[in-house]
Length: 320
Image 1 (cartoon, rainbow, N blue to C red):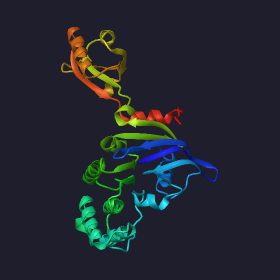
Image 2: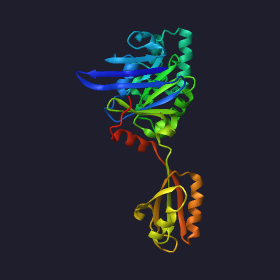
Image 3: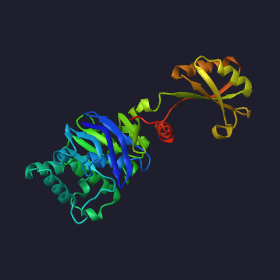
Image 4: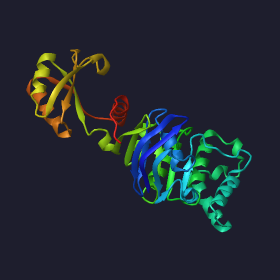
């Protein structure tokens, strides 16, 4: 659905995108991540034909953005950050206007208004003036305008800004439901949002693609085991270093994780590194108890997308 090849965009000599190549498959929910100024919004503006690229190629549904701008706009729904709306219109009037831009007839327009107001939870305010809506309802209305006409590609820039926790859950479920029948490109600063709804994610840094792949793969697939036990620290480290799969034992500050065991004896906290999974937890427990030490806590920690994001945007590694 989306193909970018060595895309470059400059503004008055300043480079916003540099040799960016990326593909998004049909029916995929793709997350676009990056720190402020990384080039995410510029990428979306090129794809939605707001600005032309300086060089390189950008294709949407088989159409090139510079040659087929109007046809591409008919194939996508776009929710930009800030949700530009006409405050003097009523909700249904704005949706009717959006349907008119799509070239929908009167009967189809009525059906679309009913459909998107239901999807986005706007039934209670559909006759209300847009300028009187809360920030959360404005965000939902912006999403509804993007969905009018059921476009095959939906581009969302920070779609849950201003929503309360219940509304966030509803919007995330809506995005998940769109996947499969629609292609969704989601730009956000909320990493948990990408983990909740996206099958793949791309991380942009300084205008370049630095990471791209399934969310689980981006996390690195690495796990650590955290152990809290009662016993002598040096002996505990030696015992756990001998467990198969453990490559390194890292002492942790006890003040941050726990103070004392049942008998008031200080608890030793250790993090085990290596090629570890849930199956190693049993071996760790057996080693601790077999050495006569009291096991207080044992858990498997998974690498997070936040850690992957920090790794990708801190270094200089670049894929082009």
